[in-house]
Image 1: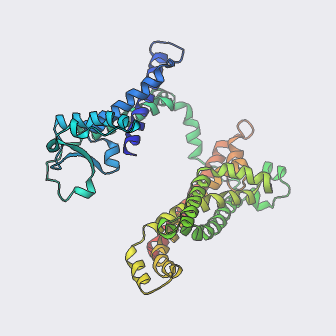
Image 2 (image 1 turned 180 degrees about the vertical axis):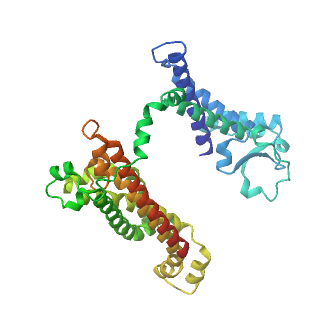
Image 3 (image 1 turned 45 degrees about the horizontal axis):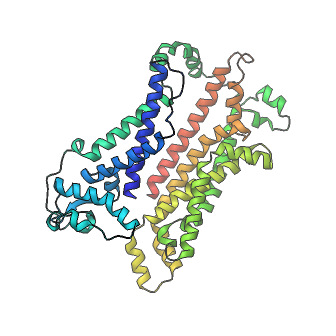
Length: 415
């Protein structure tokens, strides 16, 4: 696994190099064709990155080795000398071939017993290792590799996202009128129905066609989604915790299934769930609440399960020593430890759902977002449309700020 991690890093650097070369040829040399490797180039890249990984692990401390707590040491548990490293490098290449043909390893012939180097787990030998002065991080193989990865990632990310700072500063005045309108909001429809929305939605109550009615709708959508989602996520979180389920093959299977559920469903944005539920039950607040609820179950389930795994094992062992059953250990040992965090996460999730309800309104999820996107798309139809957008935005800010203050005070009391 350590070797695979380092090999993937070198492969990523090879990909970044090809991407940067293409970007250079396109923007500097004006070569408008994609640089591609010939058929023989791919095996060459695999071989070269493989060998660089081997050399890195033999002659340095790589990120992969550090990640898995490994280090190449001599028999005296000191860093091996160059000849021992060369012997280890040779064994690395020769012994897999000999094993393939079921031949006797040649380790003894490639290194003397006194200089033999082996890969060891640091945790197993750290008490016997001599104290050595640590090297500065920027002079280590691991430090150089991490810096190279960060620089390549940042450089590629800069090009992929097409960041153009000169344009950002040069064209800033073009958005000046919009900023001025946003900071001079018009609250004429805060409690007065918006005539266009009221005309297009005759079944709505008058309060629903006002900005105040929209924000109330969003708050209650978020509240119901959070409460119901948290109640469902609470029991599911125990099924997704290793220290609760990791005692049998069936438990591990259920654990894997539950973690997959959490990861998959929280990876799909609420806006997509709003579309699915909108087709299912009809577009509106109900579809928006279902979308927020499903995302809340997956997100809180992941957070709750991590809290279960992080509990102090001492009280659990003490309760189990009295002969308590496993469910009693959970009820009296786990739940008291995690309840403050559960409540804090649930309150924070309510805050998140209020903000997310604004976005899912784009797909007919109801709430305050209906007004936000209506006014945004009314350029040329409503003279002060950006002032109306400002009113919606500042209403959302006021509600989120209030909820954040209330939830912060509640979290202080329960944690």
